[in-house]
Image (cartoon, rainbow, N blue to C red; front, side):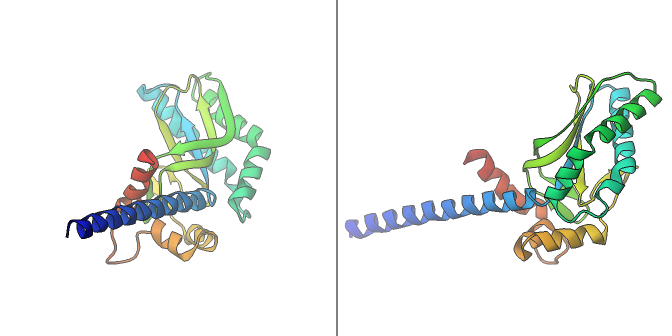
Length: 208
């Protein structure tokens, strides 16, 4: 009897290890596939003072407005990344001009690089925490709070509103697997909210 109990414990332990291994692999693979499907925007304010935070948002609106045409006919995140690098001087000039127009003289640094992002919800679409390719705009000393959205496909807060156009959903649907698309959307009735679904991804990223 004791031998049977020990055998069961060993079996359950092995099963638990296999289950965790599969979940870790799934979490990593899912995040990687999703992160490879988008290009994000990451803006870091000079500081957390009120005027520096307001300036960050003004730069956000101006950059999104003046660069949206760059990605208009883009069909993949890799293409968007290449275009962002090609037009980085334009992005920097746009941000710098807006800063000067508002009476500031902070230096601007623009790079297309990999950045860590938390889980973020955009209307009925959410992206898990992880590392994403992003256009990073650092204002001045870049000691302030971050702001982030998605440049491709376009999914950004602008002027206090949120826009999740059908075109964006269509591009995500064409890029992601059906399972991954279902995971990042919160439109299906009777499912666990997407924020909760991504918690398991964050837990495995943190501890494993």
